[in-house]
Image 1 (cartoon, rainbow, N blue to C red):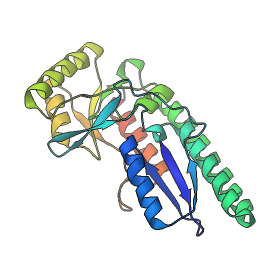
Image 2 (image 1 turned 90 degrees about the horizontal axis):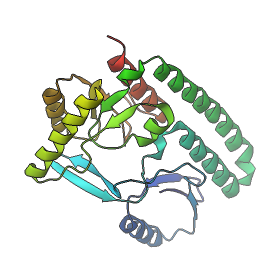
Image 3 (image 1 turned 180 degrees about the vertical axis):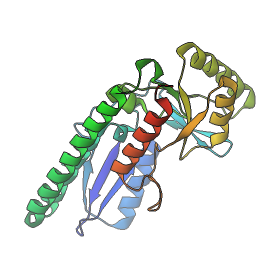
Length: 245
């Protein structure tokens, strides 16, 4: 769940929570700050997926860190959900600063139009990829919203344990699925150790198709310093790797 806390200075903090423990930690931080700011749920009204495994892994170095969460937290990979975020942010800012509401509303309309165009661009680009090429492999299962909205299937070694024996079994199972579904490419992720997907690509006989941005932006000098550029980078990386031979 993502929330936005509107301060008197109209500073918005967007925080993604992955467990009830995180909620408790955030509540303690807010209480310690002494703020009386309104709490706004940015995902209110968004089309949120359940996490079929009841959680997911992030890879930090050699370690797989499990995040227990009944909902898939990667809602921003759907541009339609991002538009809901924008609407909720604008509404919250207007409630906190009625005098500035016209500006917030105008900025929201402009950005929503940009997101609508981005959504159409994604559909058009994916439609140009041959249907038999629309299966790819990533490090962890962060792209289910993109898969649902745009028709690219993402395979991942979700559930890989920190125990090497379990990881080997899971990777072997994934490689069999890659071959059965004729996956077109394997992608690294900006937040994940690339060695695992490199091993998978090598064993499956596929090339690494580049790096996708799943859970974080790049620096200002990188390819994904904003949300729109992140989505465009991922779209370009996918379409280039999956173009017809």
